[in-house]
Image (tube, rainbow, N blue to C red; front, side, top):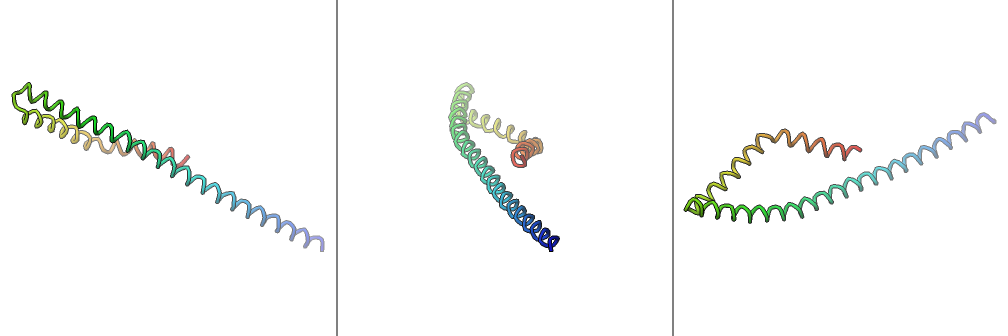
Length: 115
């Protein structure tokens, strides 16, 4: 009977250890999800706050540059047209480099997500 009691005791211990492992894994996953959510939320908040001020600054600098350029050329519409063309050229350059942006973003986000 001693062998059966030892097996029963060992099985009970293994079951307890397995349950503790599952609970610990569940808690770890909850903490990991919480970490990723908070990192994502803080990143989005920073991007929104900084991006909105940068956008406003860019708008004012663009208007000032277009007015100055238009004043130098004698035509305000030509100044605004040239500033618009500059933005169009920048957009085309960024579009052509989009795969490098994708690679960089995936590399940065992947390191944070999988660590």
